[in-house]
Image (cartoon, rainbow, N blue to C red; front, side):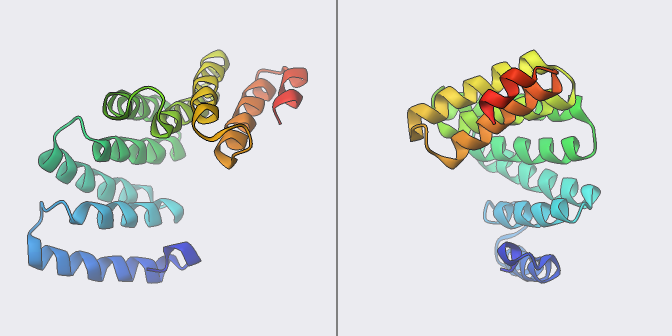
Length: 183
């Protein structure tokens, strides 16, 4: 659709058409609906329409849980999406719980050294900064960093992003000397 081009209205129109067709062909709990619902949720998240984003993410999560069970990667994706909505609204404790649930699932599904596990640790690191839990943030970011370096090496965009997060945690902790080392 048009999501990558930043045309949110066109993207929503496109996703609504796809969703309508899929609903007619498959019914309301078919797994093919979940990606479309998640994409619609992401567009609404970008538009800062958090209630709509949450609604679509919850629908997608319900479908994924029903079709795949509670220990599936797509369920973890749903938890991460819901965590993002909560975090954007300043509901950091709720976001933390969703990110933590995603971490448990991704670790069980992919093993402890998978990049998807690193994403969960990075999300936890980010929300811990907002919660002013800087040491916990650093711990999570460093777990993410170790995983990403093992998978991609030191010169990767995801590694740089996590290093930036570590720098931000040190900065918020008023440790500028350490922050500068990570930026």
